[in-house]
Length: 270
Ligand code: 6GU
Image 1 (cartoon, rainbow, N blue to C red):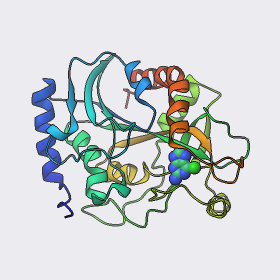
Image 2: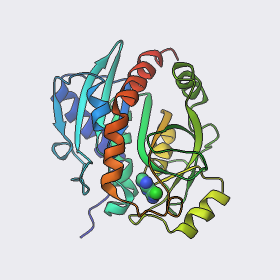
Image 3: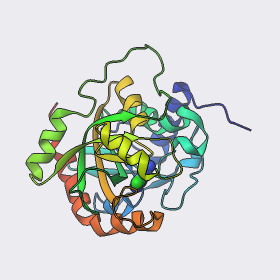
Image 4: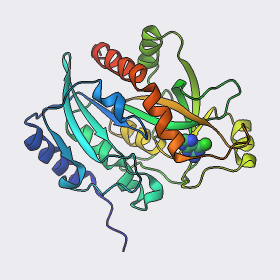
């Protein structure tokens, strides 16, 4: 039986419960961690408390191994950071409300910036497993929208040029790319990857785009960072494997954690 999608009201209840559980009423930045990103989270600092998402109103249990399902509250320099270890994907069947709930909760908890990380397939020639890529823009190919409230929201510069410039100042070797967000849960066929490349996609995955739209609707600044965990179908001849995705995350964790920490501590002036 499909559950009723969590509403913006429920996000406020979740933020209140989170404030009680963490003892912190106001948070500044939220970081959503994708598959395999958990090791990078530990480099942001030891959490005083870690709250299971299922204890908060509106959150649903995660479906996939490697998607943790807890929320940490960690100070990083002057910023109080909410780390969401785990996210709800559209393919889990809880609707766009389920996908957007973590973002709406973070906004209700005071966050004005959200960092969306993910594990992505590399589509552009020259990309390699383990490459971090700044998301410069997206193709929402899920067929649905996470907007509530006013329609026709502008998505120009959805992925903050200010934060992208800051990230490239920290690590000048970072490249940028367009992320295609699909519903999944199957990986794409080689023909679909050729189509996506022709449409201007550099990266492909099953998350991020609906969260970014929900964040924009809340007036929250968005930063997106993909970790290329595998090359997309048809590029290497090898079949795709979820374990490969997790292993690439573990291997890149130190670099990613350092970048996130530096970005968060320098992102405050706005
Ligand atoms: Cl190749 N496709 C999709 N849809 N998601 C992914 C991926 C590929 N690699 C990691 N996540």
